[in-house]
Amino acid sequence: MSVRLKADLVLENIGELATPAASGKPARRGDAKRLLVSRNVCVAAGKGKILYLGKPEGMDDVVKLTDSTVVMDLEGRLVTPGFVDCHTHPLYYGDRADEFAMRAAGADYEEIAAAGGGILNSVARTRKASREQLEETLRKHLLTMLRYGTTTVEVKSGYGLDLETESRCLDVVTNFAENWPQTIRRTFLGAHEIPEEFRGRSDDFIEFLISEVLPEIKKRNLADFVDIFCEKGVFDPDQAARYLSKAAEMGFGVRIHADEFHDTGGAAVAVEVNAMSADHLLSISDENVSRIAASDTVATLLPGTALFLGKDFPDGRKLLDAGAAVAIATDLNPGSCYCESMPFMVNLAVCACGFTVEEALTAATLNSAAALGLEHRKGSLARGMDADMIIWDLNDYRGIAYHMAIPDIAHLIVSGEVFTEPEGNR
Image 1 (cartoon, rainbow, N blue to C red):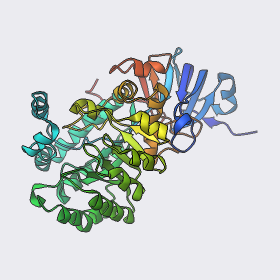
Image 2: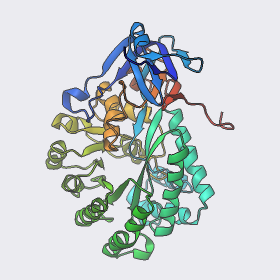
Image 3: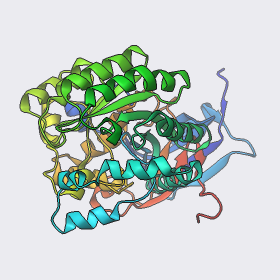
Image 4: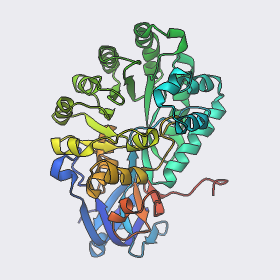
């Protein structure tokens, strides 16, 4: 007789449960178009993991309930995996609403940067910020993400561009990773822009990062990944390849901002260095679409940024049909996409990037988890997976993309517990 496992949480009377298959790998082609849809089922979780998912009559054979077990009657509601936001920039200080107004009046992103705005504007403010100010900014954004269903999130640095500020920012997010409900993955984006002190000396800056900053970040265990902005006027493909190769040698996972405004070949660099993800890809060439599709690198699209900047949307259909593993993320940042909402990204993927509803939900869960190396734990619902779930005030998963910009979320389950907002935020 098998030993029954103690359930900490039971969700009963689920009307519909929709999830990508828990295959331990990202979904491509036909697999990305298919969700496993179960009706009239229940879920039991214990110690942060799913212990049982199936018909109610089979649950007693697998789990046992105690006086401390929380039992929720979902009254026919929809359950999906929690969202995984695999590309965000919430570690900064000071907004850039003034630049947003300039853009609305006709200036474009590159003109604003040339006039002293853009990333370097945030760098100047972030370098002056206290730890407490950085903590409050990060906390605000993470809490909003939770409200919108994000249970796992990647957090980038990149608004310090020096050892002191980048270390301070990454130390802040490391502390959150140890004490905050969401699962957090940390990315060092010291190569986000060329700081004023290295203006005109991008090679010297890359060497400074390689020789002085990366070893310290590694020594202090402040980051899981290293990223670089490979773009015209910032870092070229040769610099990106050299930098990411060195980071990989040090034991970091690597990722890259690629082919956002121009076809620089950043996607080819991603494949060359076996990057976890190549992100943006608004200007990716057909040749590099084929390269990405044939690789293990996840193509991460950021439709909110295209909307915010008034650019053409990324061609998700082309990447999907080529066989790429495609993820979507918010790209939350102070300058080019001030938005924490993954449900809105799902809607944009469907309405503007050529995704089916099923492909968009897969991209926002399983494939986003794969972009962070977490596809064995996150992004799908099955026995043994992390118990991160959204309980929707819906009875059909298609309503998630259908209700534009309004997330119909009733409850959030994070690591097997019902999320309750901290006091003072309700």
